[in-house]
Length: 246
Ligand SMILES: [Mn+2]
Image (cartoon, rainbow, N blue to C red):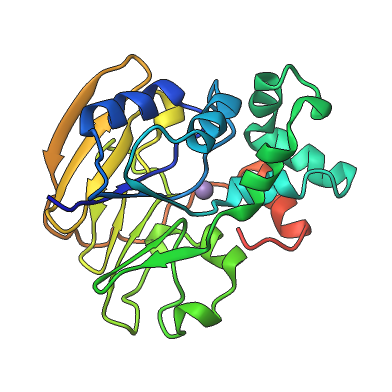
């Protein structure tokens, strides 16, 4: 059985990632698409990168780039960049390298840089944040694709449906809006790491306690009414100051 298995934001949650893949046992017929945000906030960012660099499965592995990989790659540019990274979970990543930049091997820096902006199949688009609705994918800005938020998602002109991460779904389950499905379910915040087989509408989730559960994707939900906007976090204002769209 050929499967396209999309996995959401890992954020250093190695136990969740291993638990999920041990359960799914992806074979050479499968493709595993990692949606990015491998690092930051969670306990084992270094371990997650090592695991993916030494991918133990015969399934093809597709690695997308999340906004946290972009932030880490730019952390060395200036004190402001470094401070921003630390605010959004970089401290935990640094801790996983014993708090020394010199301990981050070149292979890990290359890993951080190499992720793709998106991956597409005949019917699906996989991306970290989201896509601009009216532009061909190849013409879109990769940084914007990593930062777009799920509530702003609109159908893409190609007619393909989008699978994304990046925006934590508070209920701990993936959200299906028809044209777009978000599978970031807050792995590093005591939540779940989600893997979605979009074609079959089936998902599996694991957490840091090594638990597994599964479910069927629900029907599309209406967008919630606007209003009651939460105040932006400190990190977001820094991101704006540095020219990153929040
Ligand atoms: Mn993200």
